[in-house]
Image (cartoon, rainbow, N blue to C red; front, side, top):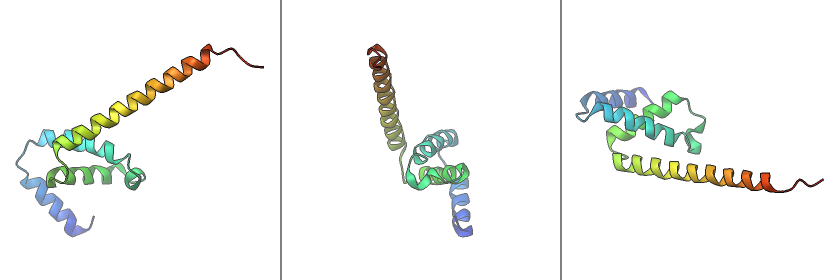
Amino acid sequence: MSIKQDKEFDAKLMNFDGDRYDVVVLASIWAKELKKKDEYKNQPNAVVIKVALDDIISGKVSKEEVLKISKENLEAELRAQEEARREAERKAKEPMKL
């Protein structure tokens, strides 16, 4: 972010009139989701958190969107883990081939 963008971000943060605790929680959830995207994978955590905070405060992404995306990704991750567990069990039951 440039100095001008930093000042705009600081002003948004200081003038935010919503629940700041909700913003922190949502931003941390959103940062975790952003980190999964290719464009943020190699970015430092501080940059990703700042982007997430800016997205939440500016309204680029709503609370409902963050929670929906996070829930969908968590469910997909749990399904993948369950499938991997089933596959491991199936392979463990197969007789060993020499």
